[in-house]
Amino acid sequence: MKNLIKLIGLGVLTSLVIGSCEMEENPNFFTSDNLFNNPEGANTVLNGIYSNLAAFNYYGADYHHLFNMTSGLYNTNRDKSLSDAAGLKPFSSLNFVVNVWRDCYTTISRANNLIENMEQTSFPDEAMHSSILGQAYFIRALTYFNLVRGWGAVPLITASVTTEKLNYPRAPVDDVLAQIIADGEKAKELLPDVGEFQDGRPAKYAANMLLAKVYMWMAGNKTAGETPYWQDAYDEAIQVYGKYQLVQDFHSLWFEETGNNTSESIFELYSNDENTLRLHQLFTASNAHAGRATWGRFKPNLEVYDAHANRYPNDPRIASTFMTEYRFYSNETNYKMKITYPTTTKRNDKHQSYPFVFKYFLKDPTSLNYNQHLSYVIFRYADLLLMLAEIENELNGPDNAYPYVNEVLTRARYVSPDSTSNQPANWSGMTQETFRDSIMYEYQFELLGEGEDFFRVRRRGWDYFREHVIIAHNTHPLYDFTVLRDVEYPDNDRIMILPISQNEINANTAITSADQNPGY
Image (cartoon, rainbow, N blue to C red; front, side, top):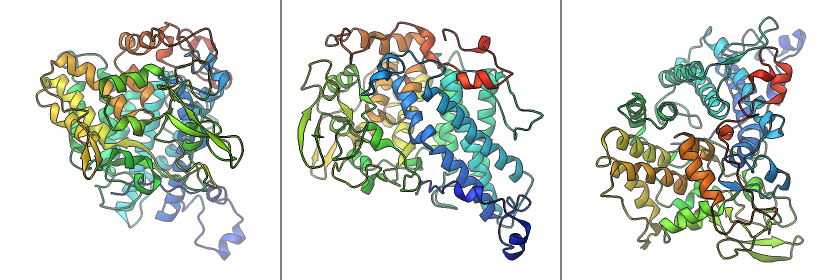
């Protein structure tokens, strides 16, 4: 199954407006009248949606800036972020807040345009028409899901914006979730099966997985007896089960030679020279690339490393998740090795006080280009298996949940064709409550740094977040909160959601300062 989203630059969209005489000379060029009546024109618009999805201010960089830094799981080399985003004190005019909010709505606007026009047209290849339309519904649903989880009530816009209808108020969370579900259902109906139609685009099971995540979010910290959403989540997630498979070696997922377009990928964005995802630049330590700038923006907190190493000290995934030793270049040829936590425990050292994330760390520090072509996987099958384990435990207890999580753990033990580790051992003999607590950590051990950390630690509510993130961080014995690098977190539930973009408040007459989220 191929899941690469091959992106095309936006320049092709800007060339759509040309003079009438040129149209006569080139009758195959697209006009606004025929743009959505043929696969070439519709795909041009669709590529513009994907291009924005992967743009710097969305998944290309600022999505990670915003949601990693405010997750409560990371420190950063960006000094000024230590006192705001990475200190769980974001503000409404913070560039990451403004940029992600704006580009989410840019993506939605483009999806609205395609949906609105494609619903009124057809072309002979009905399967292609359905696939293009289904992708637009899927991306709109995904983007609204990011918005509602990040900000709560948000403007709900499902049609092209006009001068007559320019400003939208914040819609209730339930209304936004209802729209996400409706879009997800449309995407399921329209998208093709795995391998059925077009390589490089999501199959319908990506929509099933998205809907399962939506229902799990809606279930929150309630039990199956208190809400029907756990059953709804199961009904969606089980549709994806068996349609993909784990790769043999977890370590191989983090190299572009072996990590792109795998059997495990359900939905991913591909990076190329024209449309660069900045993951390597974001996650690679400063001065770790010979002669070229990398930023070291995200460094797992000590308690995050300790949780994994203490539970599974011999887990091969530790070396594939955390970068604890790297080259530090003084110029293009000279370097010295930097050894980070847990070997180095001294505080206030930008380069050694915290580990880095191996997954997106630049693997070849002498490469000519730090913008490598490793895809960014938004939905991965291992996540789906852990979701099914959690859902089954909530519905029926742990007995039938073990096979799902144990499939992930069995793969985790792989070292080489001739070697496996003794950890992590398969699960058994747990109570429902023990399983519930353990599975939340298992997401972290398997999926750290892959884009869902902010949402996952908040999904079960403030009490869970306070205990497992804020208190776990603030009581770690090695931190020294009197130095620059170590940041004490405020014990304040306002960080459960983010501040509405100040630019939105300034420009949107339907939203005022009184509509800002509490505490901001």
